[in-house]
Length: 187
Ligand code: GAR
Image: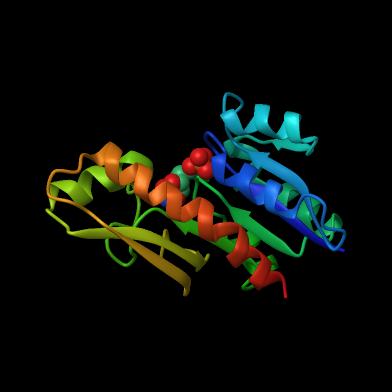
């Protein structure tokens, strides 16, 4: 059995797509959803999907190794960041070499780095007059959005598109590709 732990800070639509994708599979389970945000939509989704949730605060995450130790004790094979907005501490990255992946809602290396997340990304893409955007799935290292890319997919940005329009196109790509790429990484 391969075990996935998902970190999410927000709505959790990607977490749910991944859970749906693996539902009924006997070789892979979503062992745990972890969140820094007690108000995150992902928590209701996890409850509905019968996936255990671990909430943690900033002090626990950055000043202790409890989260790392917990994931190691659970024999987690892959850590998936699905809309997780905090930088992963160095100790956690070191404990799971090439076993932590993030999804970013743009074509990295463009529109990445600290502060470039969620809607801010799509606003910047439209403000710059880009004619395409997309998604990047990449391994996580000690810098925001800089680990080795695993997969990219792109979409057209029309001159009339608003940031919300771009967000919708990018979300379609995320839901279409992220679960499948996670599956590939487990092999
Ligand atoms: C996704 O678009 C993901 O790419 C983005 O947050 C959204 C989460 O949506 N992640 C980042 O911006 C990371 N820097 P979800 O909660 O519905 O899955």
